Image (cartoon, rainbow, N blue to C red; front, side):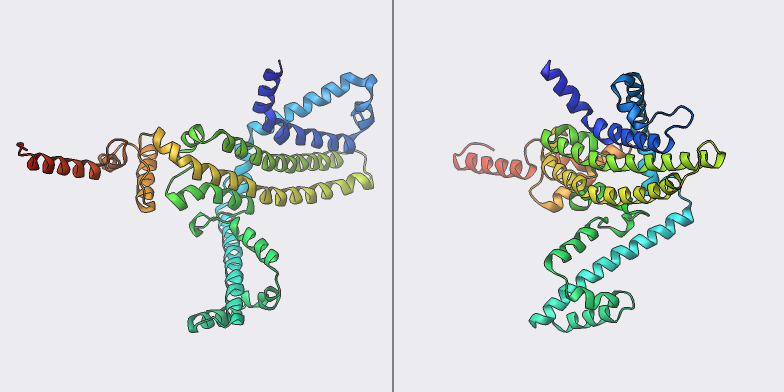
Length: 361
């Protein structure tokens, strides 16, 4: 029985913590705002043992709400990432803003490194010119005095902010959350040309079990704040509608609750962005330790050189993503079996041995 319960919790833990629990929190907020209206019970009524039926109904509503939001998680994430429902002009403007933030962080860190080298007397002429250009920049130069006094920890925080962007500028999207997620989607391709989005299910099937659990746990934290965010906005919109319709009596507490929920939604969004750090680290671990087992499972031999490995994953990703083309035969040299170079060497050695023994070749 214990194994059955453990298996159920392992399979549903992400759903419970990531979606059902925040839905219960949002339901409690809705009850607090709307209690006493149209038969809505108070929190005390729900906690009262004599009203177990109402408590069961509230629990059922929370579970149902969590399941619905979990089923809609793809469009909800796409909305926050900037892929869904954004006009082209707004997406372009927001993307340019994100690129500006990325380049500003890059320049500030470069200015710190050059300033350190200048203080140590190890800056060459090209470095001095680059440092002078950064200090004279109308935007970057504003941070020169401030960043000069940053500690190592504060600089590490700047690097963390920069690392929440994709490496490739072409991969930068319109929102902070979108970039935080895009950088983990880009990792395998940037380092090894392994398209983890195309080969995700193959990769997760052969990667060590611990890495798959780490990804589930780390994504659960992001799911929690995303669900909390949307729930707050739903509660705030419902309160505005009820107040405007006159169904909900106006009071200072209820009127203040609406902007407070919106502010909290923004806070949860920022925390969700930070929570993608663990998610990105877990995906990075899966790609790093899983690409060896993945190559074996796909009948491929992992090359010794990084350049050859990048070529192999480029061909393998293309084979999976696109219809078959005869050019895919270039992948043959990476397939499992004797190394062609070793085979040629062995054949040459055998021929020499037979010739030395006077045997016909």
